[in-house]
Length: 213
Image 1 (cartoon, rainbow, N blue to C red):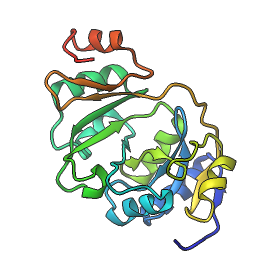
Image 2 (image 1 turned 60 degrees about the vertical axis):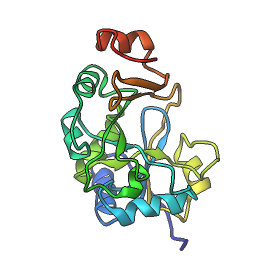
Image 3 (image 1 turned 180 degrees about the horizontal axis):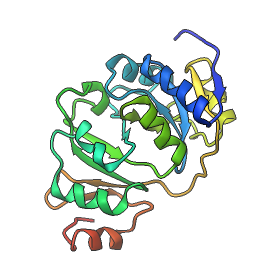
């Protein structure tokens, strides 16, 4: 893909506004989240979503998760919101829980791998949420690294892998740690696909025990 100069933007109001402008124009911006750096594109922009796959060298059969600014934004990507998803979002967002919901029909099919479902999360990282709000829509939340390589936690690590492939990196530090727990709220009962930062006991408490672990 064409090489370009990747800039580092400060995680202050001016830098976040500049990064959001790039995202609205269809460009890619890496930004810190609760654990790792994410590679962001507007999730509703089919061309930008395709650019994420090219930048990462990622196979198109692999769906991309999306990050929201607030739990109230879930209907922007979900065709409908199962009651279990509402309860989980109310209890654990912002935070380290990824909830799979039915995808809206107007989302780019490449985003969810033509699966009809979408993985969603509201990060607890304030700069990430500020960027999502400023961009005006949900962002892709896949890790900001080349496919198969080590995830990045700093701007320097992002640049080592994606420099010249993306437009900007929002300055900061992603602290690392345990990845999010993933729950498929489209299943009955909701099914845990990956245990992570949110424990099975916490999920059972939130759903009155009605969860498959």
